[in-house]
Image (cartoon, rainbow, N blue to C red; front, top):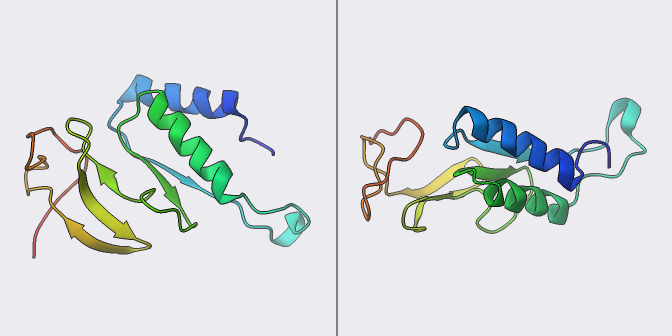
Length: 117
């Protein structure tokens, strides 16, 4: 309710895209604490709305944090739309991105640093 209107979210997404559409944007929810203990927490629906706006504005990698929303933490290839990195919280369930940062299905570049053990 303080800085999460559709207009504000679009402006943030447009700014990030103006720098590089491949910059990851992590959207985290607010939890009431200290002097804002009377403000309700950000809902999962509000976080998902923000993520979908960011994707709709043309960002390749938009993630929700600190709320369990199915698929909202995963890395999806901007070229072929396959799930390349499946996450649950701070755990990576699997990663298909090769060490050069390419999608194994369509060879699109994926922003980030990738390594294998």
